[in-house]
Image (cartoon, rainbow, N blue to C red; front, side, top):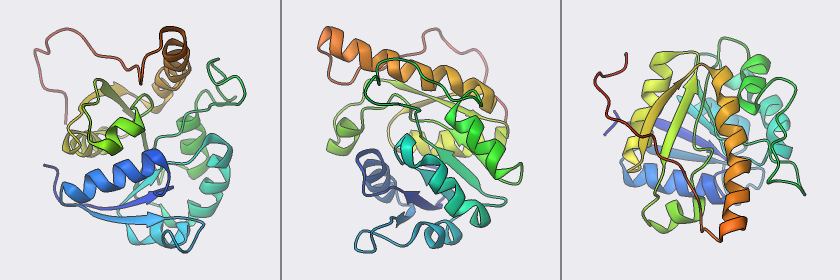
Length: 207
């Protein structure tokens, strides 16, 4: 298990946010839920200020507003961005933003004082919430290798397999792949398609 962390899950009353919050509480971490609804959690800015790791689990249409809200509360912290740039009604079509990816946009906006890491793009939230086997790996992207490693440990605490995927620029690949998986789900009737990394590692990644 990762060392005990204090984690703010912003959007923690949603499907993915709720599943992550519940899973990390079960693993022994302190979890603070942030929400615009005071009945469901602390105000997002307050939740972010109280935590060492801040998780964004909001729909793409609320992504920039959330970044605006927390910018003053995340300097020096890990910001784990799970956002996928899905643009209704064509969510099965790749539509990346001008910055290249949602996570890259977050890093550019928050500045280098925030250590943005992206992950969980293709995890079936309903299966994770139900405690079902989630048959997929999780790619982890970020410019700070130590921050990636901390997030990878949190992913492992949920029973999932993390893989370091490189810099935040590479998040574009996983964010785009989510739309492909949505298409595959519909085309083949799969309940939560995912992906696996094949091959046998011969070394442990740094750090």
